Image (tube, each protein chain N blue to C red):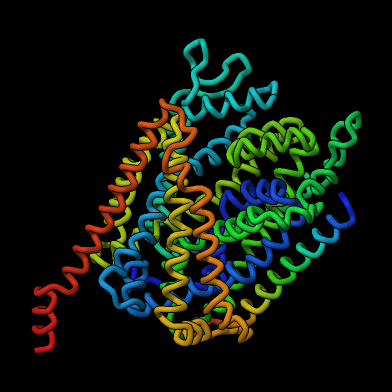
Length: 34
Length: 535
């Protein structure tokens, strides 16, 4: 695996996992509006 | 009870059900093959651009259209399109959003049943003990009933493979029965429960398998280039020259479209149970993000890297070219056979695929149930019985003619081409017919997050134009050769034509049902009823 490959892997994983966790936290902290 | 009166029990249940709808076999099988064969890490650049400009905006469009229709009493796409587009043909265009989930359910349930079957066969150590790719290919074909051993038995009895006639059919009946049972249990009692338990289990199994694959190192020290690091490199090392190839951009956009289950009609139905006050912006984004974690982080780390570690880059390229099913049902069991506790890991792998499959097929079934409930007032139990009987009958040719490309034909037109058609149509209707101002305020209604204003421009211009370009280019490159049956062996042609007749008949059937439903709704008798009610 090249350095470029590692950079892409870490950036993609970091971005996706970060976004997912942010979404989960926002969803759990916001109750149904009904 | 009408399906229209149902609702989701919890918000997290809804998001997991939506994510379950999106996470399917493609996340674990199609994505790594696409990435590896389209420039590796460089593929991720158009892939993420497509996610931001096409996938997430379309997800918001489908969530908001579903909620818009549901609030007005129509959860399936004929009613939704009729509500946003004042045209007599709108409801017939919307028929695609029921036709596709129905046809896909017909073959998808059968493939899903292979995962359940292989999961149990793996636990009982029933795979061929010699464990080669060729051996496993014969085993899969024997399981499908497409091949018979010289002794007259199904399967390769010499290797101890535990296959007997009707095994695949038995698992199909169990899988269809499970689908119908959960659909019968209803939205919060069935579909949501499966998602609440199934999705966390799927993620847990995927993490266990990821850890196992990432700790493979170099399985055979005599061949140091066959390593897990090189396996990851096969997917992630960027070949930047690939970015100048339009096919790579098309493949990336297509993968985003498929993986998020866009253009299918199922997202609309799930979102139709929301009220006007419920958020769709954060929920749609959460669904997309969860699906991407399953795809990029987990799907990209299991099958292809493991295959490279055991067979090398050249052989993996060849195996991947054999298609997603070969990778999942032939290559992976052979790899697990070579690991300690391989039967257990194999069972986890196939059960993971089964969960990914059933959470998607439930969404397809729910589309048909919602249509029958909304437009004909059919009760859930009757609708489930009807759906079960029709799907059971229509799956028979899929089971019997598996080796004659009958299923591949359904998959191409209903599971691939149709999605592009419907996706392009709905994005144009949303942005340019419904109107971007109304559309934007519909997305922002009850939103828990503030979306950047730039997305209004993206939704109005970038997503529709991108969708049109992708649809036309993809159709130009793929549809003519499939339509003319180029490369289809002569013995398969009658079955391919049979699949087309079945699809045309299904579409005509849905057109007829829609015509009848609207005649009842708008016809003289309905007007009389209205007048009587007013009086």
